[in-house]
Image 1 (cartoon, rainbow, N blue to C red):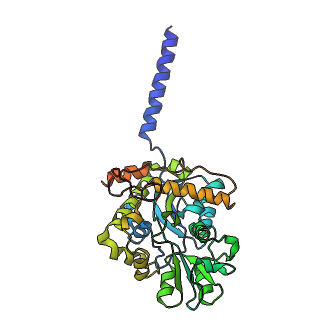
Image 2 (cartoon, one colour; image 1 turned 90 degrees about the vertical axis):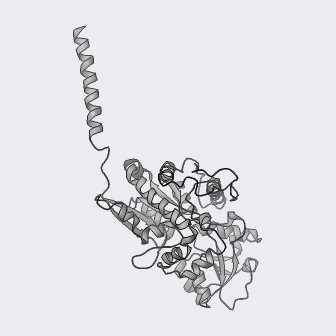
Length: 365
């Protein structure tokens, strides 16, 4: 009996000692570097990008300041190959976080990439169809049989396909050419293509008299817009939750600043450092509230859009099998950041169709 009692006490003391040591020691070692991949070539010195609150954090060095003194270095990597190139970097563990559009991130997930979507960082981006100035093309319906530049695999690819479908055309009805943004612009200006789909980057050429916009998704169904988000590799998140929280805190801070109308002019000046002029941003965001475009919330609209992209990608055989979406979004860090910064009710969540919900704003999922 005495022996059994001593053995029991020894086990308890051993367990208590182990627990004490576990609590006394750090739960994990902080990473030496945090690497953020951005699905665009960007521009400027240092290289940055626009259209996302993340660009504000980049220009203002808010992440660098957040980790100053902690021994953690922040690295930004920009990819001319956009979303597909970011997927490759994630697969090779060359980056820890990714700013990426909806379609490429879904393609990555379908190919087995283990990631988590942390927050939205630039939503409802418009898509445009542009042509040479002297072109006879007046609308999407005029594209049949024409050579059209489409940056395949990006979040604008599916929107372009859906815009074609809304006008009675399929992608096979046009002579699609897969070109990145810079190559597409060069081809259009030199009349190498008849038209091109793209985003705000085309306003610069329009204002220079080198292109004309003949179609825009602005003001149409919100389903004809593009979404982008901040993702993290699942294994990095599991090993470094404190660092993930700090990154999310900075992105939420940037989203809040970028959503304030009094900062509109300064926001466009910051984004202009990427090489896209202020006038282009003014055109892209004309008559659109900043808060609606820069909200970080994962609301019903965002979830519905990602599910729709999965369905479209399956139909078009851009992915081979369906992937789940609901368990992909991990908004625990977002909720903490919103509460910490006192902005839980700053943004109004949208319903699945993109309309403001009548209920009291919440931090969402």
